[in-house]
Length: 119
Image (cartoon, rainbow, N blue to C red; front, side):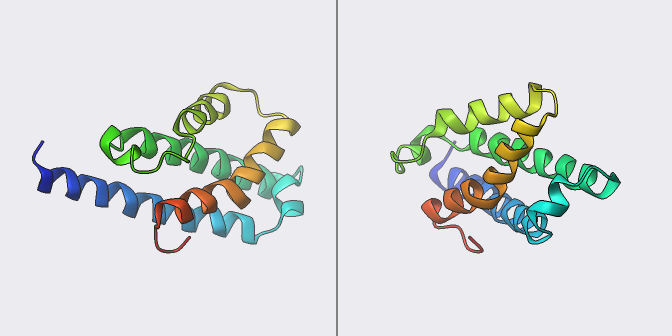
């Protein structure tokens, strides 16, 4: 891949991450109590939260290794494992707390570390 095309691809991925970060922030803005509620609204928020975690990790996986190498402090493998855990696990209370914390702190932290606007 040429340098220009790779740069465009990276920018698309970073733009996707910014959009996902905004969605994660929107979920968090509803509050943890609403997120953990047993009713339909809580179920919808939790499903949306899990989807954001999976999507963020999927986009991160698509970033080229040469880009990731510029950010050695980011735990890239953990992000991939996080996706696998959320995608494969039963929806239990421990997972809900983990996903909430990921939406609240880990995704914004990742975006800050990458210098993505909106973080």
